[in-house]
Image 1 (cartoon, rainbow, N blue to C red):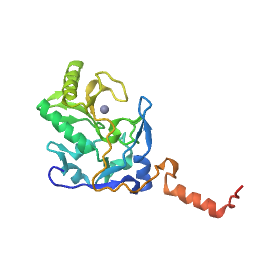
Image 2: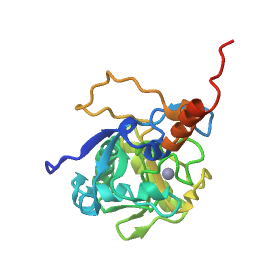
Image 3: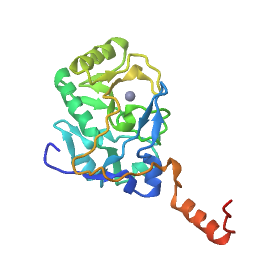
Length: 230
Ligand SMILES: [Zn+2]
């Protein structure tokens, strides 16, 4: 981190069953065009509200700005410790460049940065689930409404880097884009340097979702008749 603070990195396969079933690490998800993407596995763990407010990802962007959600997010994911994919720091870096270019503060909307796969707006895969997208609703004192304003800032974002993708004014995927600028970097997955990739894990799609399901399964096996191999 820019100020030397370190955030704990977790492998989401090590989290409890409920968190894994909400974050879906390593699971495949289709985007609006039917292309499949593998959901992120490594997350920053934000222990409490103070950390969320104090930890900065770049000079002008605090971690908390990327985790603003309302009731559309799963209740468990609104409780601390909270989790955000490690690619969020790449997004913060690009937003910092965008901020310099526009010469004013850049404000991210509620539900406008990281949205888990369990978020109500997460119908199909979008970079928001990788923490590599931001919906900006205000720049300096200017509230982003109207074709002209949004297209102006879309143009500035696109000129900044070929890595940046915007959504044209009036797009209709999930959110009304007439009141924000959507900036994304695509499906970037960050594997932090402290991670060793020797552990293979199977996504939960094929496994019991919750501990109680596992217990019930075991009970059935012990109480019921042993299935005969045929
Ligand atoms: Zn967006």
